[in-house]
Structures are given as structure tokens and as C-alpha cells.
Length: 66
Image 1 (spheres, rainbow, N blue to C red):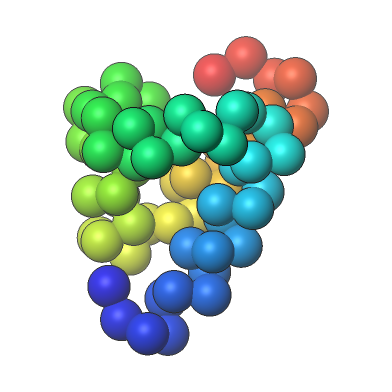
Image 2: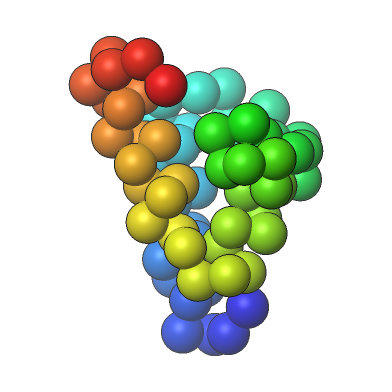
């Protein structure tokens, strides 16, 4: 992950912390997730697909089912 991407990841972490328990996020980022085709959220970020995680934030904030 480049230094350029870090502020976006920090902003994403803050946004996720508003909709889920912050203490659970560390494990969530490194656990395979069906929403990402079995990839770990961290892997999704590393591939430059952070927008897919923002979609999760949007859905959680809106109450839209995953």
C-alpha cells in the first residue's frame, strides 16, 4: 500500500467505525469475506478496489441488505 492510499484507508476505517464495533475491524480486514468473493478486505484494498469497501459502508449506513 502506498503512502498515497493511506489517508483513504484511514478515512474508510473511521467510516466503518461508525457502523460496526471498532474493536472488531482488525479481524474483519484480515478475514475472507463472501462479499468480496472470498478475498480479505485488506486484499481488496491492496488491489486498488477500496471503492468496494466504501460500498459496504454505504449499505450499512443505509440499512440496505448486503
